[in-house]
Length: 243
Image (tube, rainbow, N blue to C red; front, side, top):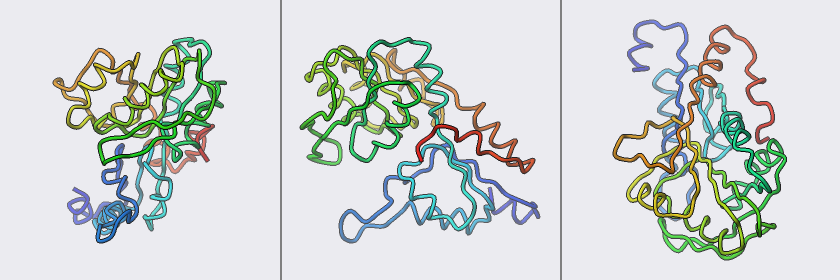
């Protein structure tokens, strides 16, 4: 599509990519594997994009893979309104791993809540084990925050671990609902009260569940698109987000 636009003499092409694919492959974690997140960035640039607009990247450093301007939006504002409307008591924001501490801290600050971290060990690509919980969760309502959910094994195991450590209720908000394999079944059978996701990835009818609540990021994306088109600042859309 970008190549067609470029060959049709478009003055400027902005690629709006709510979910940036291959984002988890941002480094060589073992020998002889590609860094596909960088490859996709090169392909998008070579195809003719002048600017990229995306949301909740798996790793902040992916922004540096692009040699063109990249605007990185966050779903924090959308989740914040929904969570505050629930009026949850004794709320603690939980990062499901060490890498998500910065995002969890931003949520905790905006929601005026405590902060905890799940220390887990990954036994295989789709299996994890909770070892410790850093922070006070006993007698608290826990809110786990993450950027994406694939098979759901890590999130469900973390929720079970939090309950073992004394949490009274566990909620989760995840931006990108990939929901591959048995993810929906796992969520439905888990002790999660509610999984809040956005519509950056459409959820088909056969992957819906009473525990999954979809929130729209359309207004956030449309405002960013409008500001980019009229060459206005979009810094206001980053207020109170990680970094």
